[in-house]
Image (cartoon, rainbow, N blue to C red; front, side):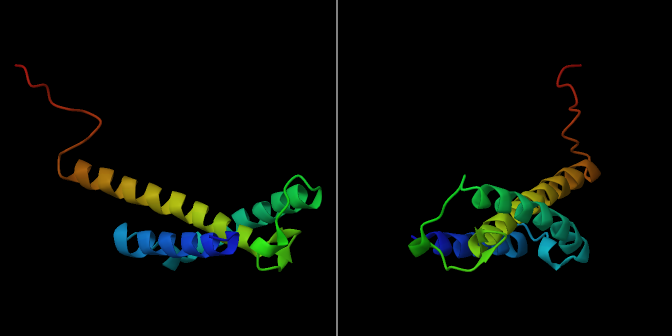
Length: 115
């Protein structure tokens, strides 16, 4: 599978996880896109440095071709997938912990089984 196909697969998988499995709907929130704008700036900065200096190189036959800040556009897709997966997973875990806490099943403190 090519780098491009893997990048698209990662984006689709994260969208399915966010919208259908975790149901956090992270990608529908304006605050997410504001935070991501900050993140993507630094991602482009680092991609530009690493690829511009030749630390990281890409096989031209394995990518689409267009580049942003010296890095292939596929890097933006992978970066988006990693950031979104992390944030959606964190939100899902926190939601589960908060739900358990509200139902009296606090995971931090357990009642003793001995009297």
